[in-house]
Image (cartoon, rainbow, N blue to C red; front, side, top):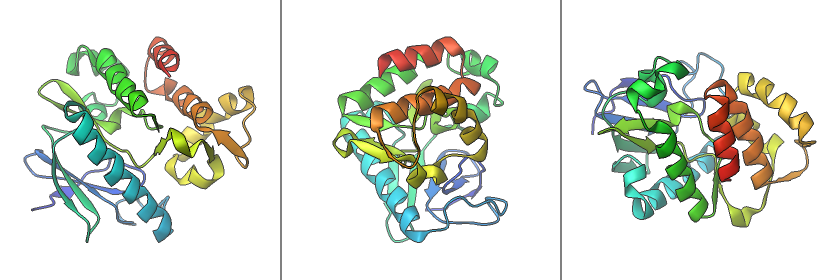
Length: 219
């Protein structure tokens, strides 16, 4: 299956998109050119752990809630690539990275995102990525991806310092006031629910405040 060209939309893996923008590839490979020399994940064990989470949780979503994720066309274990059926670039890119454009792309995007979040809750998962680039739009429906930053409730806690490579430098700065307000120590075990609240607070830069409040109430 052809890979297509590089498409810059992720901090961790290398993104590829076909010329017709009908196939998206998550390639769990550390590509210095793709990341402009600012690679976050240089430890192969960490990259493998992220790959395993993506495969596990995306596959489970496709089994339990197939309408909420893109169709999985192929999982290439040998090369650590996941091929997904899409219909154009991700939600963030299609909106021109502007919050005020969301409604014109998917009029009921709020309800759809909350429905997907509820599916995660029903499965007892904590998915930390709420970024609009973690969704594609197919036939007017949001399709969720980027499950490498997902944890099962049974894992109970997380040491944030151990997953700092999941978080961009810019977002780390956005987290600081909420970290202090919630009295969270990155070096100590933090309950997953608390970390999800912290992560969602940082997305106020990507969504209207009232939507983030809805998300926090839904946790």
